[in-house]
Length: 93
Image (cartoon, rainbow, N blue to C red):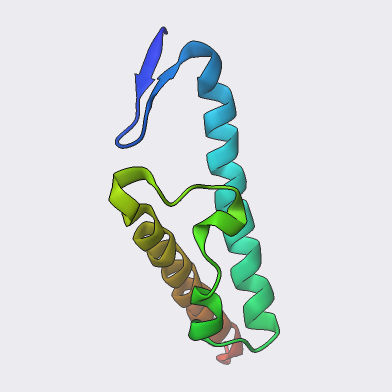
């Protein structure tokens, strides 16, 4: 494989593919850890959304800044998913 064209962002050359995938996986893992930590600390959604994408080593520039919106959507999705799991755990079997 010579190149990969992502749904957004730059074209990736062969030597850039693995690092790009690893960075994306790290971002997703780090965001999930943040959500879990904040929930365990009793944080609010407002506190959650105060963590911008640049805290995770990513840039907000692609797509004219819409990447930050996608980041916030990721945070909120994981927050709601974790809250639903907490509610499920609290319900008697």
